[in-house]
Length: 450
Ligand SMILES: Cc1cc2nc3c(=O)[nH]c(=O)nc-3n(C[C@H](O)[C@H](O)[C@H](O)COP(=O)(O)OP(=O)(O)OC[C@H]3O[C@@H](n4cnc5c(N)ncnc54)[C@H](O)[C@@H]3O)c2cc1C
Image (cartoon, rainbow, N blue to C red; front, side, top):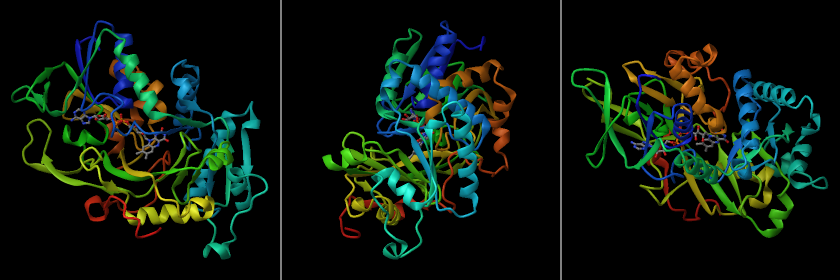
């Protein structure tokens, strides 16, 4: 770190803000310049949403430990803890003996481990009845498979009451406010057009902003999330796709009825249901997702030609985009079983949330193999938000050469080369992502399902 006087961080999502704060704290003499397209909370950033789950239940022991540390820090932070709601989180599945059962069982084990002195936090849902009651109350009963016209999907589960959700928008605003208090952190809100290298070399020199301005640095940290592939070639490292999210307004009676429900997720169908928050419920699906393929100049130093990447298409540029019809159908088929009264309820709004998925679901914290002063801090793989209190310190540990070897290896570029074994940290439905422009709807017409 000693050789860096000016560090540029591109992106003010969880990776960027957390890293900027960690550098500023440890190295008051280093100037940190954070550049984002917008002032945080950035409206279409992956880190900004009504809610994000903060859970410690992980298949991987390493992430489990890190998540426990993060949760402790979130709860102990006088500002951020205000945005955390310890609603608990239920993990359910259809009960079949497959990959989801394996993830369910290992997640349950890590929850039990985390709660070994507080087993009162654990509740076991041994039947479809139990799962249904955990949301709607003891005197209720789910529809029978005959009424559903298919087998039931929400059949088994457990609840870990220590988990919860956080208001991801208010928290990102708070982290930004915190970052602003450091005299050595500067912010610029403009789009970075490209990274500029010294002539005939692979050494990073500056970033070129869209307005033609250049900002010079000794090190650039690319923490641009799903947009990173335009700044550095991440072929084979990060796949960019979006998953579907919708919000449904609730009546005061429904808010009262469901106020104590946990976040309820179904591993087999990929659905995540959130308890009432600010008058609505949020539902998302960890589907194979949607991609937006575009052609860009190969951003690597000394590279020629173009490459194809998937690049976020968000409501900033396409404000009338509405969740694809098939995606809505699958969500509603789940609601029919688990939240029957919402089956026909229109979404108040929907969005596609963009994510940067590595083949293994391990993050990417490493130097770009072609340029040793371009550091990548991305590859959140749909589970990185919860690590915001710790991830920046890990990035700085990495720069200093002090990151634990296990993490260096897990988050390395090399680890992802040819390794396609998903570690199950945020498992998604199997299948190919679809080209978004072929399936997106232009504002909801209400014709198909309601
Ligand atoms: C639907 C969904 C649900 C999720 N749920 C959870 C959860 O429950 N728990 C959890 O822990 N994680 C969850 N995640 C994952 C988590 O949200 C992400 O891993 C994390 O937010 C990624 O942060 P980031 O900093 O990489 O990206 P971002 O937050 O997207 O930040 C990147 C920033 O870079 C900026 N940028 C990009 N390009 C440029 C440029 N050229 N110039 C200037 N600025 C630029 C963008 O404006 C943006 O602000 C979820 C993800 C999704 C999509």
